[in-house]
Length: 455
Image (cartoon, rainbow, N blue to C red; front, side, top):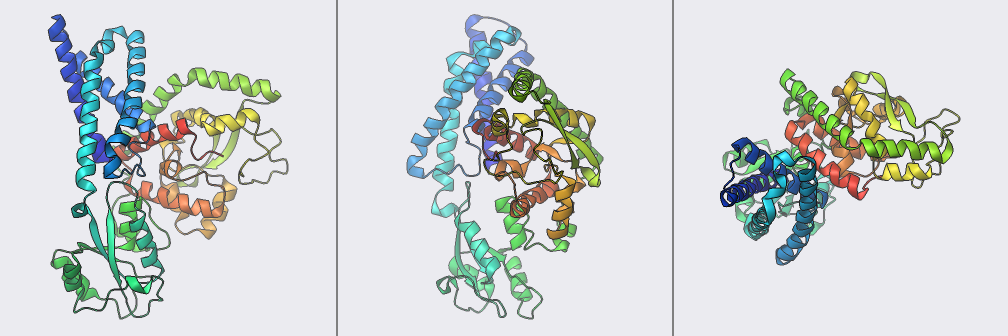
């Protein structure tokens, strides 16, 4: 839903910017090429979307109550427009040929009004009870309890209501008895009675004879969607849960695009994004190098062996954020909260993710992608691959400077954290695309600016 909203607002902003440009040209009786007008409109729309993303307006946890929709949306849009206005005027001074500074207040008024109306329309329709998905969970065990929690705490624009669970023989009940539906003639009639549009199969063990195959087929044929818990988590939480997924789900579930076209598009995206950010961050990188050298006289850069695609080892390049003797005994150690090994400058560059910028060189070398699972050290990979199912799947693509786990989860510093991040990594590996890369890049901007997830 967030991606659909982004596309809608991007098209509206392009249209309003184009109208403002044409209105200015008509008023001043100037002649400009269509390409120049389109480029200016594209730049305006991109800056507005970028500004809104930094304020979290495309995050999955951006939830607004209908009664507060106008106030909250205006409070978010006004700073976003101001930020975009400043950036656009800065670019107008640097690139006067674009005519970016000539858009004037009309473009911002029209653009802000279009975004505001879009958001209000969205909240007035999606937040109604009619748009709430009603679910029935098949099962009343631990997996059903997790599905209930996900549906209740669903962050984003879609709302869910679990009307109840259907008990299955052999399952150890974990959900409250009040949530268990009384036995009915069939699942289909039960779904129709409660107005449920979907049945989520949340059974921990399907090998028993109580698995109602015929009733589930009847639901599918009767217009009630049937999905398993793994698909539900993948669709709604952007996770592939390793505690509920079967190998057959990964084998036959589609995705895992490794085609030549996808590889070519991804490589082009990597080089473009890395090159642009590297040029823009060059002054910051130069200042960081001077500060690191001035603090303790140690080396500016730090190389560390990491595991890349297909298990190949490579040296990742980072700005040094820890003391030179951080691992004197040579034994890798997870980073801890307020880690005493981190230098004063290192604490800031970690918080702002500046320490990751030198990895652009790894991208140019082809060892990493801009977006992908974060590369881990061989010592930890060996441990995690032994203890965590499907951990090696993340090595089927190149690791990345940023990734879905980095924008959705906190800094990983334990085996439990690694498991949680793996579930996001598996989702990315299975569903990776240019659109997903763009969404992660937009979310990364907010993570960097707000210092989320650093340690």
